[in-house]
Image 1 (cartoon, rainbow, N blue to C red):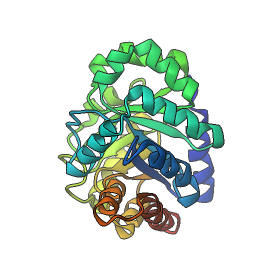
Image 2 (tube, helix red, strand yellow):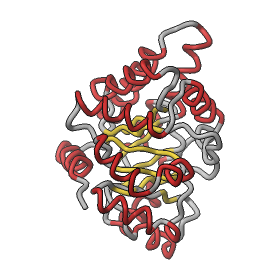
Image 3 (cartoon, rainbow, N blue to C red):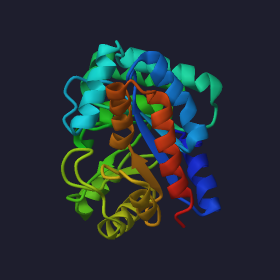
Image 4 (cartoon, helix red, strand yellow):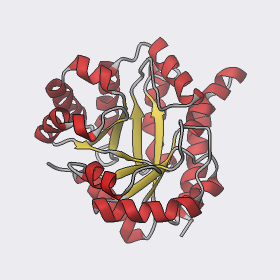
Length: 271
């Protein structure tokens, strides 16, 4: 298995003494062309790692902002296959930025595990986060991803005790995504004082970097989390910029990238 791009990025940022900023966007939101423009603009705007959501009709872990983004992506015609094509187009002009697909198991089962893993690797995808795939049921998918040298990145939560963390850490690579708040995305805000001990526990269990998400909405909060975690993830606040632009006939691309710059700058200057 290789996590070359992910490992290289975290090693470089550790040498710089700072956390990574991870930007989550939805494929096809609000259109395929605009989503590609956003995707291509993220690294220059300040994203160290990109999470690309693939639209799904029943995103159970998501709050209203990402639910609406998924619906816009579906209305734009972006299936899992289309998301992989978008990833491949991004990778043609960016050889270095780690790209993680994030979504749900049903479209992958329909695609087929081996075919998905092969197609993800061909598209230049470095890892996947599958929200509704528990470790106990993940071995067939993990086998396929390992064969294609694509990382499976798992979620840990505030309710994950030490025994559960050992299960989560098994066959996880790249980093662990720590869900900082109970509930769905985009509703509550992460609190650095609550997150710090949890990050230490997850690091100790996995020996991997820990990215914190599900509650980062402002540059100030991003900076606070960046002081205690290896990476800070923002998603709902970015897809909210798409929605706001659509409501005001504004430019969703510039709004998203300006927000990424503000958050990325905060993470860079946090330590």
